[in-house]
Length: 287
Image (cartoon, rainbow, N blue to C red; front, side, top):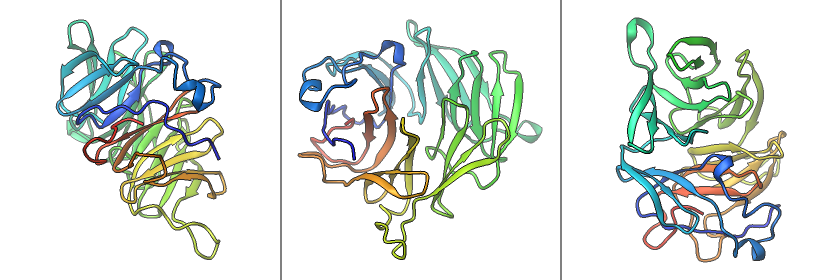
């Protein structure tokens, strides 16, 4: 089980969705450092969305950049410093930070041009963008001219917004409430490459499930899946066999209450940034 220590709790008002800034711009303050040493280092920058704004916070918690914007589920900082976010039901947009304007946009359309729900997306090293949509549930790769380069249909029902994640490999993770499992889909073939049940089983002498609804999912460096639930609240790391490798209860961190976890971001160090929305007055939004 990892050392459960809070390195840099940040209280960010009503900001609730968070993602780290691109690795090239993050200070490597927590790499290979025990908590006692890491507390005195520079930390890293974060980009967050909520309360009608997007903002970048410096490592010391000060606001580095902000602009008015409706809340978004997915944020990425590109190599050129621009920001890519989802916008509304079906759009992905790139925002130029200097002028705070949209410089590129893509709208996911279904049959006869009808808008379809965009679940999440990921910019690729090639410059293309991989988006995950429902109706039908599929991956779509597009270039910067908006041309569709490939589509990959995925089995199973759509997991809903905020309950899917695209990995660096291009594979997709999806939390399925109907069978209380997280499925990983091959980004090229659409086949299910692994399924991890997170429902718990008394017969298997496993802990009971944390809550009844998923709220976020991510993959740890060791391949385990990190899953947060909307009620409980808690976070747990599941191995390939579905067993819980470690878990974090809502009151396990000294002086911090975890409630309504909306985002999980795994840093290159293996540390995890939690974004939460319902922890109450005086509690950090990022841990």
